[in-house]
Length: 274
Picture 1 (cartoon, one colour):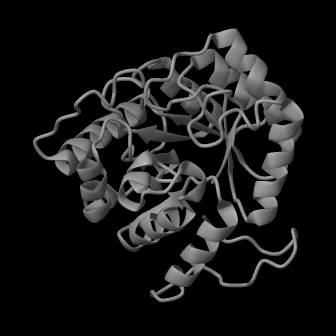
Picture 2 (cartoon, helix red, strand yellow):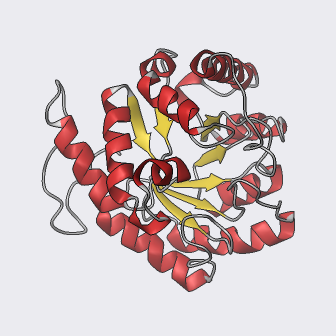
């Protein structure tokens, strides 16, 4: 799942794709690298980020989604009902909500009504406060319990269980130790029976381990995703599609029932699920 941030303040690319044409071109580049999904977002959820007004978020994402529609399946990264509705109208088929339908519970009904898919993520608090001394007695057990409850809520609102993916929320209200424990015990989250989404790409905990700046964290991103794959993750939300895809293909080739390993030599070659 390739990330298209149509924002001025995302931690990973700092406004590089705020311009409409740049965002659309970047989406095409990610697909050429092997992305099976594009996740388009118009509001940064980095630690300390300020909220974005509804009309501004709509202005940022809807034209980009319209111009990327039909390329690959599209996801909208939002917690706002109106933005999700407009995004689905513009061609998105998945709602990626970092609040797991807590900010706008009506989002669950919209997803159900449209036959869309969704990603429900764990976050402690909200972006402006989530990294202020996060505490858990057992981070894995608490995140698992939260995701299980949000899955039950979505299903009760009419979303078929097989259209829900779960994200433990690496870096969203977690310390370095919390993030590592979640990756170490990711099989416990996978035991919930829904596809697990991994979002470690370029994140600060990788920089703390390696001492690398944000643009130099690709090797750390690959390592964390390969380990997550081995422990049950099956969807990987990344900024650097080609190198992470290669790492996952090599890892998958070592296990039973691996993904197809046909080299991607042209933009029309067969993609593998990533």
